[in-house]
Image 1 (cartoon, rainbow, N blue to C red):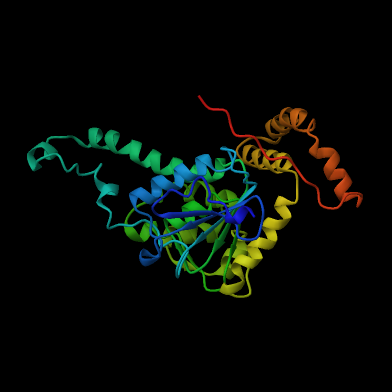
Image 2 (image 1 turned 30 degrees about the vertical axis):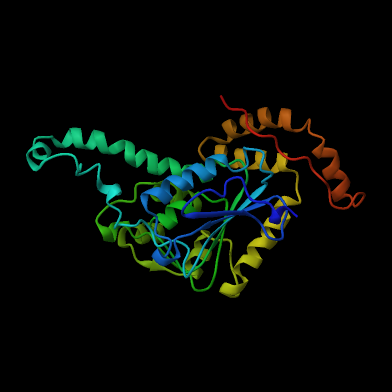
Amino acid sequence: MEASKKHPLDTFTHLSITYHESLPHVTHIKLNRPRKRNAINALMWREIGEAFRQIGTIGDGTRCVLLSGSGKGFCGGIDITDEKFFSGISPDNSSDDEESSIDMARKALAFKPQIIEMQAAFTALEECPVPVVAAIHGACVGAGIDMTCCADVRICSPNTVFSIREARLGLAADVGTLQRFPKLVGFGSRVRELCFTGEDFSPEDALNIGFVSRISKSESQLLGEANQIISKIIANSPVAVTVTKSSLNYSRDHTVREGLDHVALTNSAALMSEDLVKSFMMTSGGGGAAEFAPLQPHSRL
């Protein structure tokens, strides 16, 4: 069974990466700092980017990713006790006199690459070629919102507490929420209220505005409901699903005309796949569940 195999990416400190215990072609990535409520330190942040840049591209057979958190919550946000996040503002290798002599513009130019690196780590979820389904429970605040905004499907348990917390901590969210959250749910009054106040919002709020697509009946049933969604995704052609994700992401940031041109170009190649005939046979009831060839590893220099 696939689940009995060691995953080639199961090499990280703060991420547990395994093949799904019961579903084929599925990788389960679990945030794994339960004693810190999965608050993200600098190492974990880098690991998230490294993992999602590789998943589904290295011949690992992944067609869908299940993303969850270990312990009592999904993600408690940024780990503010990790001084590495702030080293770009106050370099450790400078004396007080040297530090005071550096003007603000130079400090800002030196710090900007760190913010871009942090943004890119979460963008890797969005750019992952296969769908990412986030199963959220407990706390999902700050960076947890930033990260889940990049997932393709989000569901949560009834005990989930969401918060775009950054304004309460004295900063504007700068790694994706202010850009992605409104595109997911709209730019209305409630969204701005949540961003300006940093107040908690409930699973029902998240469902009503469209941030999650469903609320599980209980926390214990959360992963089971995520598995139901994933099982339907992996039953489809991996070529069709990958092209669909690419087109959805492209169309979000472009005009309808540009999106149509993009999918026309992509599908002119994708429609040549043997998966098309297999899918027609499956949906017409003539062949049962279709067996699709795995996606090939991505070519790299």
